[in-house]
Image (tube, rainbow, N blue to C red; front, top):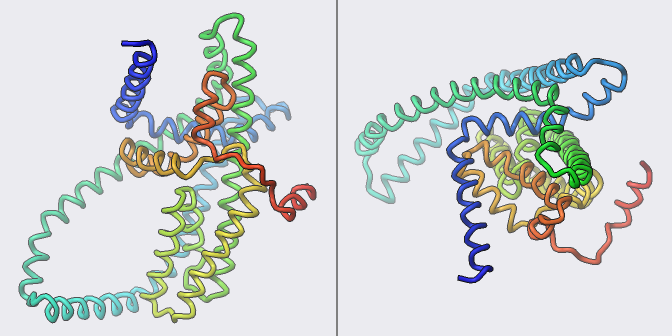
Length: 357
């Protein structure tokens, strides 16, 4: 067996072991990864406070309090929107009853399934529904525990980040310490820029979707704008899912064809602005991931960590690419994950906007 084959086998074995480790330790790693992403997001704010002579531990607790305040505000906003949605429950119930009756008649006319047979089929699904509710209760317990762990990890990572950095430097050879420190600094800075930029872009999407849905007269426009903005974290699938949910609920609430078409048009305009203005202006080209590896990251994320894996797949892949771009031996992998390089330049209007800042 030649050297090339041995090297390939070792790399495949390493990939297998890493994947297996990520799956086995997911109950620990998912909250830790979320806490790490949030710590990176709050790091600039924490550093700014430290420059103002605020002790690190106090600055870290302020960051934690700011996160809790933001989450509380978010849920208050969503709760307000949902409460107004509940006032239309009678209309929604009526629509559901009408749709169910139409579906029953359709099954009877086209498939010959009588109403009694349909009832028997639903009864047979009761065990599955009970199992689903039991699983849902277990999931809620896991979410509560994981949320507490996320807050703990966020706080500890902000407080002990210097200690962790020294530990990493101690692992490296003496002649490599300066280079490793520079890599850590550059990778951390770019990761911060990416995550902060992603947060800014989501806020911009909230505003654009909110304005578009409000102009169209969509009920609970803010709620659906928030949903669409958040789902943009998941490329390709998320934005279509958010728009589909909005169209479906608007249709159930008696929305006209003009409104439904306007929602789809709003989606198209927002996607155009996001792709041609927001991403070049806010995120920049340094952490672009090509569609091929985007799909791979999403599929692997779902297989290994489930829904949290889908949400974390792109931010973690982007951060991994940043590390690859700054470590000489890993640069080929960063190139493989990144977009195909072209000689085209950014649109003139984007360049002009950048020059304003």
